[in-house]
Length: 374
Ligand code: SF4
Ligand code: SF4
Image (cartoon, rainbow, N blue to C red):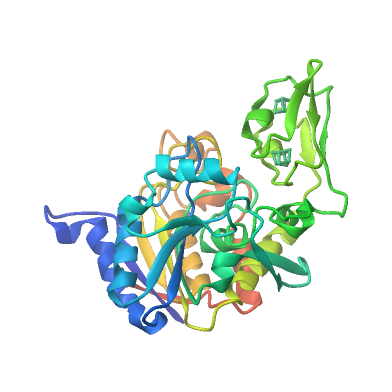
């Protein structure tokens, strides 16, 4: 049974102590950073910078509190993510979403370098074989994983496991080989490519606009996908309203296992006890923060969870979301999800519980937790 500390979102008194920010301060006290961070150690604070149009990320005010707490025990924090779109543009997105050195109080960097190439190969497991962990995460002695919990079209749930599996590995590899980078988690088959069915395509161009690498271009009234530029992220397939563009992806079970293996590989680069987790169950939108929009939340804000156990904090977050009342004017309402039904699985049709189960099976932590309200 692992302890998961919980600062609820409701603020029932007109007092700072009732705020969500004060709740985070209490969570930080409970986790006692001095146990995980030695004086002078670099500390990666891994979060997601969002995307142009996706504003529902962990707000800078919370990141700053965590940065201040790391500094207070003598650590040297840096806030990081990995390349999702071209690196320079991604740092601009971070800035646009309010994440910059002035707002968070420490350097804001791309852990896999400005071009997404900086990584170190780490053994993963039977599905992935190995992954290339972003070098600044690989080399940091300690890490705080700050995750915005939400849905995800392929994973069913995006929390700490997905934040590390997808976000802890490098976006690209110098060789141009997508199998050496993040695309390896999504795509199946050595020669997996993006295929487009011209008969089904209505030329809405959503795939072209969402592609992070400009691999899709309009040629002679049709579309051409440049195999060399493609990172195999699968975004084009996700946004296509006509099922006209496809990436040969891993099957659902295999992908969910790949997420658990990827997270385990990233965590294997740290000594035990050197990684702590904060799950923000706020603004739980149905999609990943890397999409070019953010839909309305599926459930009301629940609060912030903190733990030293990645599986326990993920299970607690998913339980909070799935047991909450589905909100009107949301995808949950569109899909007819009723009170008492598991909200995320009902709204998305994919169950994120699978990768939490997989993470527990491979020894990342315990699904049994004690929720301690602070
Ligand atoms: S999978 Fe699609 S969206 Fe992703 S890089 Fe390749 S073409 Fe672009
Ligand atoms: S998103 Fe689908 S329908 Fe729209 S242009 Fe791309 S392939 Fe065609």
